[in-house]
Image (tube, rainbow, N blue to C red; front, top):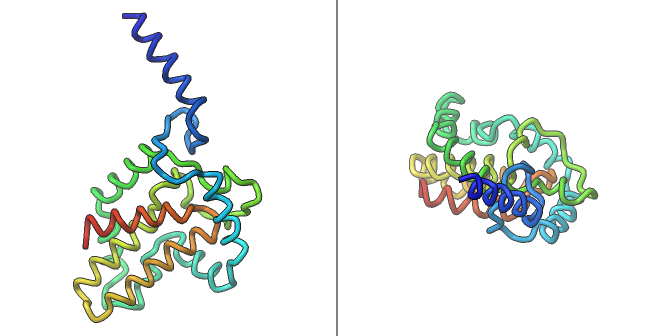
Length: 185
């Protein structure tokens, strides 16, 4: 039995050194996402294009994306919060983040100077704020079909501003949109 345990430990340690840099060093990563180094160059480029409005929008939505939506629909903050904080959605998102364990772009590329965030303390892939924003846009779009396109644009802005902030790769939001569309479209 000790032989199997020792073999497992050796394989595990080898994986930790062979696999790409990740958010939690002690956990392996499943690198189904694009190359971190290459995509971090795109994040670096985009982060240099952030405007004053981008920074303001980031500060508004970093605590919660509901602040981007609250003036666009006739829903209370509590109702919006309930939609995005369903335990199943949070658990599923955190499970995927832990499974893929992708390093944040600023930990891969030292030229990226991220905006200060209180919500970037989990792996990067998939983007949690983007999942919430796209899910909220889908749910609200069914209730307010005349606002569906506008709500989708708000969700996309929530996604893109976090890339410009230097804390997500573009592909983090792309997969988040696919997940949200699968769950709530």
